[in-house]
Length: 120
Image (cartoon, rainbow, N blue to C red):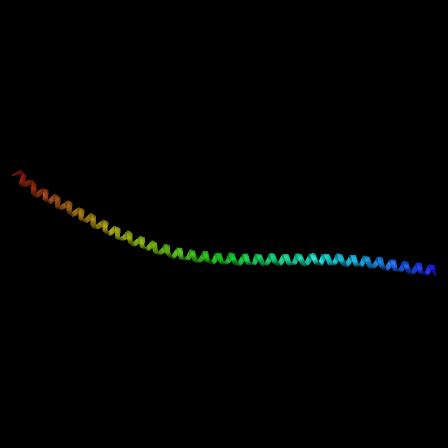
């Protein structure tokens, strides 16, 4: 009877050791799965953060594109204003030069008229 009890206790010990081994195996697997889940959540969070960052950058690029377009339009408008101003200034300069030439011509004609009078 003692031997039977001993074998029975040995079986219990073996089963208990096997159970303990299985429990530890399951716990290790559980820990690994827990880490995998946490890593997966971290990866998803990182992905979501990157996705938000990409959307933000795209919007910033759109805004910069709109500003560039507005700047280009403004630049074209100002360039046209400068061109027309330059054209007007050239017209005025031509008029001033013509007026100066006429004045000079009149002055020379007057001097010619005045000279003979002085000589007489």
